[in-house]
Image 1 (cartoon, rainbow, N blue to C red):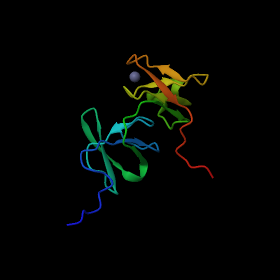
Image 2: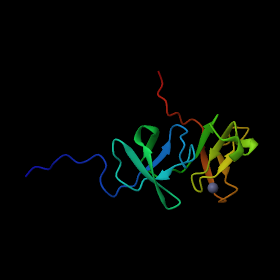
Image 3: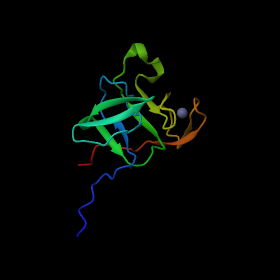
Length: 132
Ligand SMILES: [Zn+2]
């Protein structure tokens, strides 16, 4: 018996997902969420505070390693009534607690999260789009 080709996503492997576009979903733009069901071509199911939420596959970015950096979100499409004034143009999202913090005025290498009291590097140069 020869071995069949391995699936690209072995069962049991944890994945992380985040939105690439602002959608009318309870996911925060820029924050990584744990994937809790096998990823299909159509949807990715993530856990948000214990609730399973299905997100259309084309709108999410996936990674296999737990996020360990702040995500920089610029010009977010936010609801002004839900977003403090200092965060409307840009913010960074904590990989530990997913809270938003004002974008530092200078390109600091690291930022302390005032909510969970942890320090993480900032992913300043992360560019989802490919170079031409
Ligand atoms: Zn935090």
